[in-house]
Amino acid sequence: MKKIVTVLVAAMVSVAAFAQPQVIAHRGYHAIKGSCRNSIEALKQAQKMGLYGSECDINMTKDGIIVVAHGSLHPDKIYRKGEDIKRLNIQKSTYEELLTIPLENGEAIPTLEQYLDQLKKSKKTKLIIEIKNHATPAKETEIVQKTVEMVAKYGLNEMVEYIAFRPWICFELKRVAPEGTPIAYLNGDYDPAYVKGMGISGIDYKYDVLKKKPQWIKSCHKRDLKVNVWTVDDEDKLRWVIEQGVDYITTDNPVLATKLIKEMCK
Image (cartoon, rainbow, N blue to C red):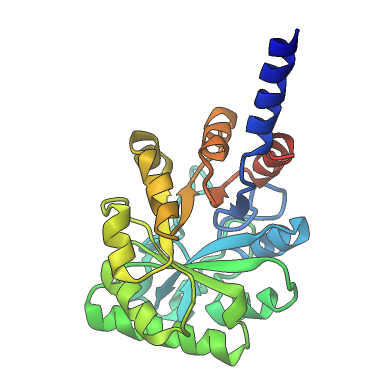
C-alpha cells in the first residue's frame, strides 16, 4: 500500500512539475467569426482572451510603408473560391495598390502603425513581430530600423518581441533594438550553442524540428535561451510540447492550448 501511495504522489508531482508555457496566437486569434489572419480584429481577439502574445508578420511596400501581411503576396491566399482575385507582390507594390484588395473579413490591409495603435489598448498581450525576408540586406536593415523606431515612438518597447528566419535580420535587430529586447531565430537549422553565440534570446522552431531533436529544449534552457514552438494546433502535439517544457506555444488554436495548459500545469 505504501508503495502505491508513493507512486501516486510521484506521478502527481511529475504532472505538477510541468512548467506553464505562455500562449501566442498565430497571426492573431483568427478562428472566430469576423476575424482573419493578420487583421486588426485578430489582434483585438487575442487581447480579449488575455493571451501572452499575438504574432504578426510584416512586409515593407515599394513606397516604404510597413504593412501587416504574411508572405510575399496579398492576399496571402485565395479565400473566395471561384472568384478571379488579383494577387499583388507586397514588396513590389505601393500601399495604395494594396488597399484595393480587402482582407477576408473586409478590413483593409493594416499598417504596422495601425497595429501599434491597437496594441496600446491592452497592457497584457504582447505583439510578437515577425520581420519577413526582403530582397537585399539593405532592405532588411531599413525595415528593422523603421520598425524599431516606430515601436519606440509609440512607447511600446516593453510590449514587443521579434522573430525572424533570416540571421541578418536577427543581427540587425540586436544592433538597433533596446538592450534586452527578446529576439528569436525561426529557421530551425542552428543548434542552441550557435544561437547562444548569436547573442539573441532564444529559438522559435517548428514543431517537427523539436520533435526530432527534443534535447534542444533542455540544451536551450541550460544556456538561458527561451524556447518557442510553432504552429501547434492538435491536442496530442500540444500535450507533447507542454510535457517537454517549452516556454511559449504559437498556435492557431489558443482556446485549446490554454485549456490544456490549465489542465496539465496545475
